[in-house]
Amino acid sequence: MLDTKPLLLKTDFPSIARESVQTLQLNLGYLCNLSCTHCHVNAGPKRTELMDKATIDSVLAYIDKHNIKSLDVTGGAPEMNPLFCYLVEQASMRNVSVIDRSNLTILLEPGYEDLAEFLAKHKVIITASLPCYAEQNVDKQRGKGVFQESILALQKLNKLGYGVDPLLELNLVYNPDGAHLPPNQVTLEGEYKTNLWADYKIEFNELFTITNLPISRFGGMLLAKGLYDEYMQLLKDNYSENNLHNVMCKTLLSIDWQGYVYDCDFNQMLDMPLHFAAANDQSSTAVIGSDKKRWHIAELVDATLEEGAIMTGEHCYGCTAGQGSSCGGALG
Image (cartoon, rainbow, N blue to C red):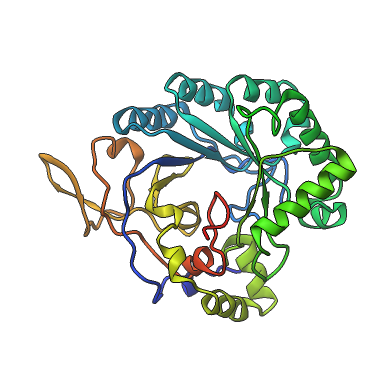
């Protein structure tokens, strides 16, 4: 697969600094029952990388120390990590809101039949990928039969109260199927709700539109088809300074399956780790300028990360183009 990283490191993207950390985004591993064309982590059924218990416990220690209130769990299919339920139970005991970034089809896989009930019991927020409300488009992007399985999973979740009960939040995620920006989020959400209800009697809370960033599988496709320069120009031409104030990396830390820390999930996939140094042996204050390649979450439990510089690259234009993009959808 062609790699866009060498093209992304040199950038004129504006500098940004971290604010108070509110969310930990945790990648539990790259194992997945699907192999989607837009997947920026190259997840699939043959991947073996999975977060272990010692790393999860280090994450929990960080949560305890810093009073983190939101845990955003992703993968792969995060539910395929054998410790997924342990993590959810521990987070629930701490009154931490858990977001499960689900591909929906995992809820129908053998061995996971009771997973939906478990998620409902712990009031886990489900943020589920559904690239379109049309079967042909979804199957093209995610594989034959995935759309119908996703519909069955959504109907199962609705029966449990997801998308209906105010305490059981169900959100859907849209990614474009090509080298273009997402349409207006509010307008597209209306189309999703109208069509999914009319055709399948499905309800959900919100639709999040997320811009495809030029990395991993999508970036390789752009290079292979000679579309990379054109797509980057599209992102830059649609840059909005207003979105810069709301980018998710300001209040989020991304942690990979081994426990190493990054400013965002995209930097994680580009191996651009969090960059800071302890001011001295007696202080936990973080300052810029470390030569250390990467930091483990266990090393940062006592660290203060506010005001640290965020690592940026050309891909950051993807989060600030048009209406903006984050794991919570459009920014403006």
